[in-house]
Image: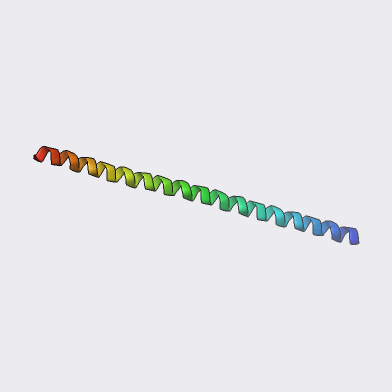
Length: 64
């Protein structure tokens, strides 16, 4: 009976460790995806502002 209890305890421990590892991997993946989304958004904003500046510079050049 004691051997079965020890084996069951080991299995529970292994399952717990696997669950913790999966949760950690999920969190790391989510952080990476969030960083990528943030970078894309930042680049899109920078591109928009640059286009706006160029359009303004072009229109200012035509007015003179």
